[in-house]
Image 1: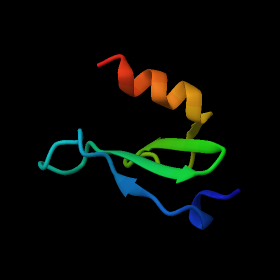
Image 2: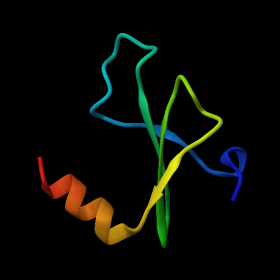
Image 3: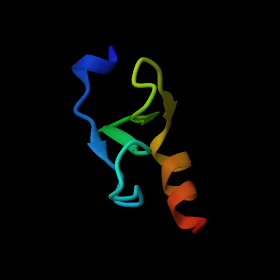
Length: 57
């Protein structure tokens, strides 16, 4: 799936200063993560890996 076809939203952990945001796009079988400064590429992980990452706070 192309980056433009995904619905991206800014992470709640990103600061309000702008310019340094993590954006996430969620699908049933994949979570896509990208840096707002470099939107042309992204990292994709599965739901289990995403849940483990969030639980590691």
